[in-house]
Image 1 (cartoon, rainbow, N blue to C red):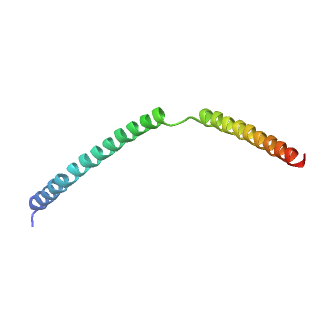
Image 2: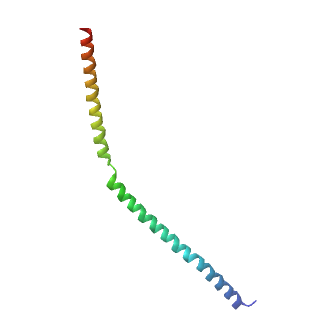
Image 3: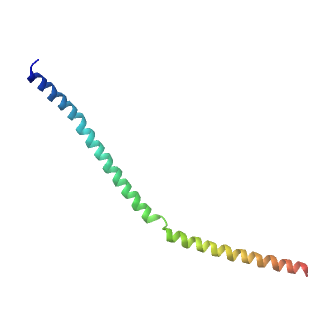
Length: 87
């Protein structure tokens, strides 16, 4: 075989390979771009709709205070009832 025929075979194989590789790379780029956009939208949704650490801490303190007040009221109620029953 002559060198010209080998060059033709190599060029043909490279053309076929490029016909497969270029669309594959374009598709992968598109997928990465779409995923990036979806992640950005999700981050925005999270930032708009979920509590921050400070808000959760404030809520925790509020619940703690209400529980303490509630238990104090129960203790007072039970001790008043105990004193009432003893009398």
